[in-house]
Length: 399
Image (cartoon, rainbow, N blue to C red; front, side):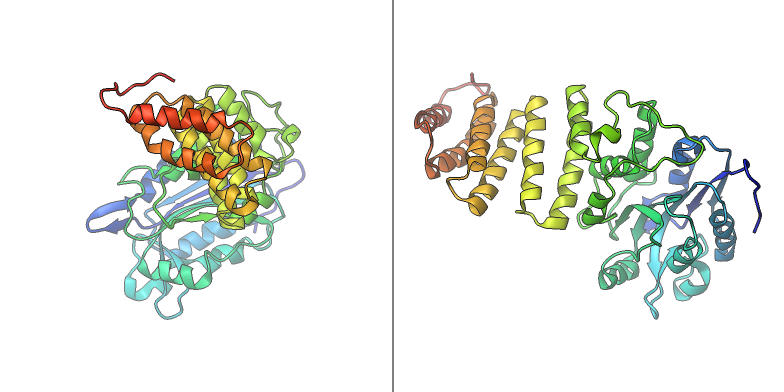
């Protein structure tokens, strides 16, 4: 253990590339590419701190004790710490413990040739609260995926350590030998503007845009993400920056919606949509598919699609919100009528004939089920649908 005197506090960045995830001769996760790309990001940006920083990159290591030594050195750093782990997650067949496989990991000797997840938990246990972030981009093999299912996810880190990342199931390509989607989008968001987004926003944007395979484990869980959505704690040595270009700030009060709206009004529709979709996914897992919290995000996504001019998508989302609210709230609820009105307006703007015909019957059925304040809405919708179904019309139709 080394000591640093007053005024000499330093930060630390530790990047660890484990074994590649390979299936049927195809590389599904290339840890070396991930670490190389993340290593190009300035340490001050990774840490969110202007303190002098030591950066250590481990790639191709075969001895788990080498990783342990570096992890211990990082853990005693009194300043901010950023740890990145990427590669294949495996498990001990006998004890079912989880391990980060290394280049020399043997399947029959996982306990002796891979890095136990328990080492990461144990070494970071004494870290000061709010000083440590761990980012993971992993692919589980069959043994690890089974163990994750038995445990209900990746065992948590100590309370003072914040964990973000993804664990993909076996058999799905996440990077095809290049930088994986999650890590790539994390890096792209860090490089996008002069003000560093919060880790919650980086994580949500990256997870939403990464094209993760079905069933992928997104960390933290939805409920934990909601609890962490407040303003990011400022690290020592980094003055607070004024918000710019729609960036989040403590004015936002931890609510992601102002930031999403600022992205959309600034023309960054794809980013706004990805962030909203990620939040909807988290909220659905936390509160349920049909929960009021989840349907609010469906409606937010519908309005974002409208702002982007994607009226077919906006119509589908408003229809989904209306169905959910109708089931849970009944025909008299004003929110149900508002969703139906949103669907009707957006559908009336759809100029692609096939898209309009596809969504029209469901819209008409919903309007028929509601005691509409203005019966003309139903008649106009039915008339437009009948006209669209007629022969000889061009593909693009007038509104």
